[in-house]
Length: 518
Ligand SMILES: [Zn+2]
Image 1 (cartoon, rainbow, N blue to C red):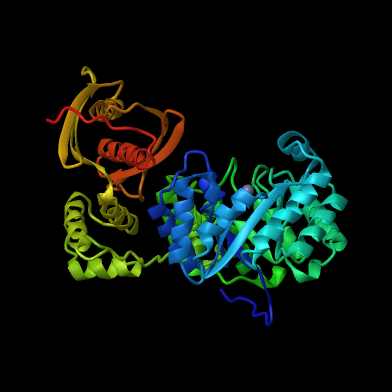
Image 2 (cartoon, rainbow, N blue to C red; image 1 turned 60 degrees about the vertical axis):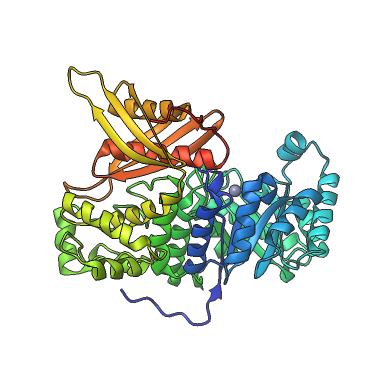
């Protein structure tokens, strides 16, 4: 497909908040290593600003932000802080090692939030916002100020707050639709009237941050581009609180595919989109719906005969974007049991899966085992194998699994786990083999997980596809996700459950009873 070449286009900055707002999705909890892995990929993807977290929220959040600030380059690293001294000090402590640090401070400005949440008068809110920006400015030059629930705020009051924070040193003003209530035309008009009333607006960048409660996050963000905003805030796969945030891949591909309409460009390396989307889905345990725009499994699939016929004659009959633009390689090399070390190594390198020294041999032997169990080892299979190698650092690992179930049998499972060099095992009965296996794990470890969500799907098409299980498990008050992949669906379930257990354990949410060595 030929794109219309437009010279001297305005550049829109992409502010990614997958690791902050996205990480606030119910059931998602990433550890510092996982955050760092996503952050490196976001830098490769070419986002301009990466919001790494909310340092005051917990020591784990702080550590994640600090490591990203120190290790990830070629991107601005932002940390979130409420408009108070404690939050701002902590945020600065976390990001001071970044190449270009940004403090992102916020306070709510809508009557409903000021009255019920903050219990503060508008004058107090204005004063607090100015003080916060002043303090942040004493530490770093790049300051983003967000007016939480801006879209339901009074225009004149908002303009007064924005004028004040610009004078105090803010460099970016964010005007979010926090509750996902706006509609595109209304939002664009609203943004325009704020910009007209704000003193000093020409000195700063204007940003939007849209939520998807009515499915309008992307539409609202694009409407904002039309009135000249400079920065779009979004998350990979659109993950986030409730219905999520504007999806990065949808925004970027809309701007890219319809340059003729928007006349702007971004710095995103579109060929990294598919890889980034898969990484975020795997690590967060948030599956991508099949018909999701751009990155869904069906986004480039053509099923009906009429479409297939058209596609064979000329791809552009039904395809407005080529899958290769987002990094999906249709004609990838097929790996199977005859593939050697070199072919596997090459494919891993092509996929950007660089394993640590010594880890490749382990992966290769797992690859051989898998290739014996299925004809073709696909890209998704390789990603899972690489994940498994990374998870070797988990504290609790599956040693063996044995299940018996059938029409007239009580489903029973025996699970052996390795924990701190010890082999622990126990057996349990359950309503089905998966339930029995989960109960056996809880018995071994002395944990009590409550299964909130369970889903099973084929990792790829085809009759010998591996099963991919995602679970959400509640340990006490904490919800955590896990994902497991295997040719055996019970084993995939157990691996998913164990991943959730490992995550809960590494966050100190559960204790493991030291007992019954067997
Ligand atoms: Zn948000």
